[in-house]
Image (tube, rainbow, N blue to C red; front, side, top):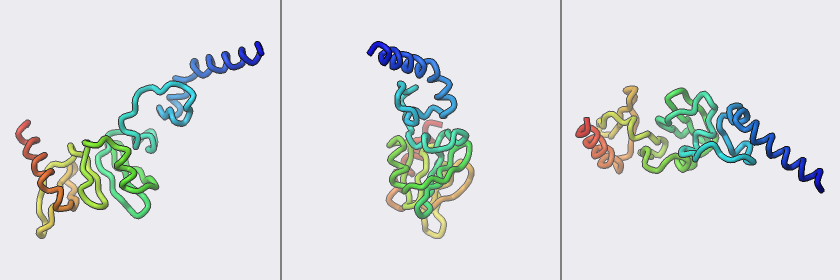
Length: 150
């Protein structure tokens, strides 16, 4: 009994001592080793599914059949999931699901234009994306507020 208690205690101490090193190796992904306390409250769970080098602010997500292409400030990653599931792993007010195959971050939207009668948003890189007409008033209001604060 005493020996098993010492084994459990020494195991917990080893985990506590090696936790910073393990977190660094696992890229702050506490769900991979759930026995220790989490480093912090994760606000963007989608980032845990991305490789360490691409974990940064999410700019946009494109749907492509059974995959989504997640574009961050540091690169692009293809994940096997639906766009709806990917959006569920993001903060609610951080962007728009403005087309059936596109989610874009609010701070990425720079302009709203019409091309052959179809609404499109221009992002920070100057790329143009089709959007649904239902989101035009909300995006237009966002751009007006953004211009007022500048």
